[in-house]
Image (cartoon, rainbow, N blue to C red; front, side, top):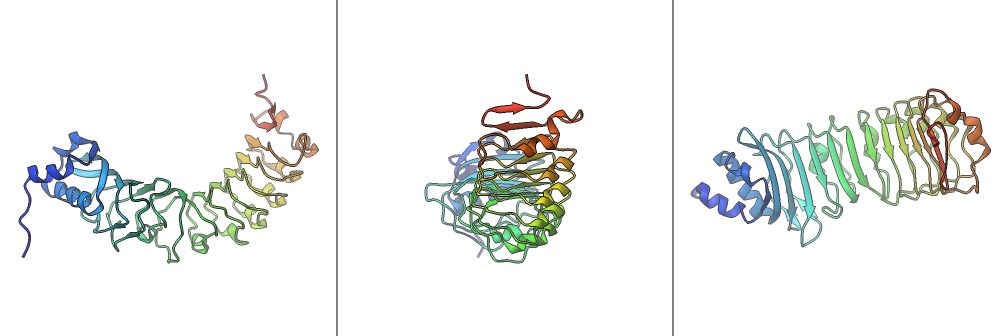
Length: 306
């Protein structure tokens, strides 16, 4: 037997103590949407909830989840586009019910550092998801990826997930802060990448195939253990920013001088006591159509030098 539907006042009695912002939108929500929101709050023991609505439907949901296991499904939220979940008093959410993230219009999901212990597998199978950001380390599940529209992914991992190589349309990849020690030799398969951030890891070398990422505009390798950079970096014709500070570099590849679009090169905190001679051969500070800045222990040279 189906339970008797709750009145709007009963639903609001569930929602109001948990809601932090967006109270004005409650009056805009349709009855069925209000019931879905109340159910979500009860099942996930959600606190400090913030919402945005449009045409009576929820489009944005932010909440602290005070549960180890998130039950139910977001499928009923047919207009929901954006999620941001924070960790609650009980720590990281360890499991999500199958279908939890099945909101059909979902395009973006973010999780605060410590909010989840693993990347939710359901999001890696979402056909419309474009952006998935997990602030901090999380285990990457061994699943077949089915997220053809994913354009941005950020998560800290200790091992490079081989499944990522299938994301040939991914444009922005951040694997910072996960103690990553190596990259796959065939990294060059990810030809759609425009931004690659690998800072705060334990990388000691880079694959030559990195040079195949010719769409790359930003490469962040700060705070690793790199002793050398591959000569293939000279093939990154669209690179505008390269940060290799706080590594163990003694020189830089001469091929960097070919990067006519390079605007920022950060090299501080490496094995040299002064800028290596190869920097002079790059010609970046003297090039008329660049505002390149080269920093080394407080030294700044280039067109912007005062």
